[in-house]
Every structure is written in C-alpha cells, then in structure tokens.
Image (cartoon, rainbow, N blue to C red; front, side, top):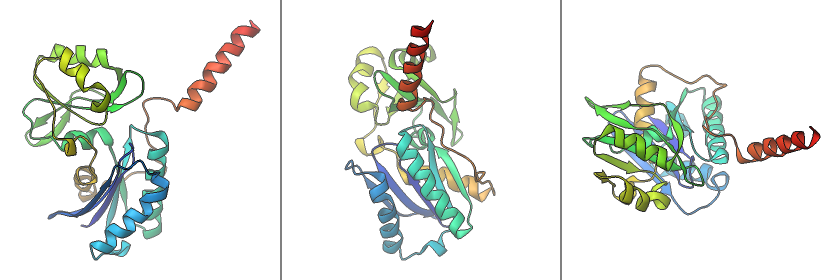
Length: 238
C-alpha cells in the first residue's frame, strides 16, 4: 500500500511516500517559505522523483495538530483535496505523536514540545510499550514550568524533541535533571514518521470522516484578541 504523508503544522514542510516495505522518498524543507506556495510543488516533485503518479497512491496521511493554525488548515485541505479527487482514504495523525515516534526506542519518557508562544508549549508524554507508542496523558498546552513539575513527579529520564527546544532547551537543562536531547534532524517532524503511524491505521481500514478538522488546543490568536476586546467592551458598558 503506497501512501502519501504530509505535515505542515510548523514552519517545516515535509512530505513522504512510503509503504509496508519502508520509505520510498521524503522531502523536508525548513526555509520559512509559505506552505501554500511550496506544498503542492513539493508533492509533485516527490512523486515524479519516485516514478509515481497520484494514481499509484492508495491512501493519504495529514497532520491534525496541534501547531500553526494556518499551516494545519493548508495541510488538511491539501490532503482532503487529493483524497476526494482520487477517491482514496485519508487519516490524520497528531504532530506530537509523529515527533515522539521518531524516538520510540528511547528507554524513558519521550516528551515532544512545540512552541505555543510566550512560555507555553504544546506537549504530551509517551513511553515505548512493547514497540508501540503509549501516551501517558492527554495532549495539552502547558506553561513550561507546569511541564517540568509534571516530569519531576514522574522521576524518570526524559528525552525532549520538537521546535520548542529552540527557545526552551537551556531552561530545561537548568531546571530538570536527567534530561536528554536528540540530534537536530530528529527535532523536526518527519513526514515518514507521521506516515508510518498513518499507514498502520489505513492497513486496518480506518479512515477519517470527510468533515474531520485539525485540533488546535488553543484558540486562534485573532479569536482570542476579539474575545478580549469584547470582554473589555462589556466591562465598559456595565
């Protein structure tokens, strides 16, 4: 089963083609270009370089978040369009799951952190349970201090990954014992990791509802600012 997997939940854009036998091809760009500009060209080039066409793809995988509001919408819309146009199924997989899955062989807690602005991160914590990724909590948006306190309670060694390391690595080193960090190439979401998780679901004949949508954990900034202005306006009218 050949599948096409993409992730656009952060500033990194990544796409991969893979099947049960392994990875066929993968492109990852971290050059801050707009996903709406590069994503379709990336997919087109990926298929051409793999000597495949969209007719050779049996299913699709997209990141459902958390992450960038705009990036997630673009990625989900792209995969839905390809899925509907080819009448092939698609599934969506958490960007946090994909980050953690790249480090599944670590023998402690795996903790992806994605930048959620200010001093907060999108996160979850995982462990390897007989070769399967097991989440030990729900996806959450936490202040970094909250996350560190939670991990201290666990009392285990922990490896961090994700774009949140750019801002928070020094804080983690200074405030948490027994923490580890992967090579830089494993600190970005890989479409191949996302795709492996999605492939397992597609092989079990699981597919997303056509009306499925990304999950954000936080409201979009524009919505939060509007609610804040409305709350202030209501206070003035009291």
